[in-house]
Image (cartoon, rainbow over all chains, first blue to last red; front, side):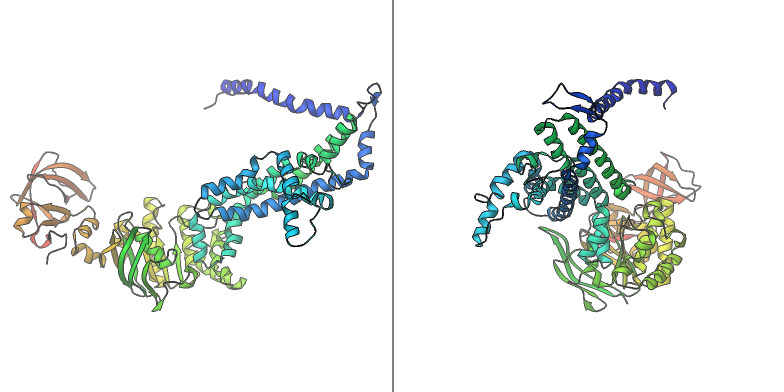
Length: 290
Length: 332
């Protein structure tokens, strides 16, 4: 039973944290918005003033921007496809009863605990390195030329590294969903004459839809901001071949020391994230209900 | 056709022999109930017949053909699970049509058979709903519908009524019995409830610890239990089992008398004090503590005036006394 006064008391008591959270969120956003319309370069701090949309226009007129936008979406999309598809397969595999199942699951989850720069360094130096890397050794073993991953396929290499990091997350969430599927449903389908492939398509995948949706939504949030892996490996290069929107903002803020432009880039990134979120929720958000 | 024969079937999970050795013939069109206490292997036996578990040794014939190593789908059997196992993301129509779709039937044929099944089971108005929007009894009927569209050689029911409330259980029991009379297909029904077994079965198979204790019609088991286990399991309230001098006088190790075969008389052979009385209206069940120390149940008339503490005298009907030997088997 909630009375008028207890409801009021509840609101009063929640109010401080709501206010704090609002400030926490609104102040940085407002400051970014403010700077994005200002001329604010750290190399010439005495020259300031309102510049209207100049900072934004610089982005839209920069050829790198559209490439970075495409790279950002390709990175998010590529990693999502790889982690969801492989995640389902790995979840199906480690759901099978095998000896040492606990150990196996820990091993599968392990990459998630490796910090992004460390993961990127490991991949760059131990796997993709043209002289010392494992892939180069394999290629030479077959008498082929080592592939120069970071030079020739920079974006694909970054997608590969990030996928490796996020695959455990996807596999873990999908595994828990798989475990909640009642075995009687699978047995019923088996008796109904469904082959293993039909069972996957008509019973298992529909059952996992919600988990897949959760994986896609959570990963999208984090993947839009991927920075450490690019910074550690390709530095956005060669040229701008692997520059994403966050990396471009970083270059404006730290390399060019132009805070105004970086702030404009930040606002563009926020708008991009909202557009992506809108389409995601419209496309797959309905799976979260019921 | 649906004649199922089990020959020396046994099943072990690792070291544990769940079913040591079973021979059983189920005739075409029979309604057979496997009944027994929890953990007696009745569900395992059903799953062996369904093909969901592999037999450790032995042979299962369906219609004279060896089906021991056939996959479940090829055996021509349909199963109704305890949890119904409906596909929650599909509508009722798609649930019922699923086995037909898997069999590769055309859309029109699927629809025709679904409509037919829905008509039999009164589901026509619910075809576009999802299982989550149905009541327990309706879900049960959808599960049965999914089974009957396949026109199987036999239906397998694994405790299908245990998730329903008491009133619904009685009506579903009748529906399944009627369905059997309409379809005349072999049905194998697993339950731990001996009332379900007695009311539905043509033939009851009483199982205990993986062994068949007795096979027979409900009344056969009731009137001529082959051993103590069946005597105690079939019938409600339970048969009174008395050992000691009273039994020895009859030349047996244990004698059994059903509560309804004890008469309250002026001077009978058994004397005791009335303990608990349960008034059901039509009958009254009396717990009587005999002078020998045994507690027995007596069914008396609904109007009986006896109360706690009253002394009474009982006479078992001589022709209704079941005599059992020291090995638990009935004596002739």
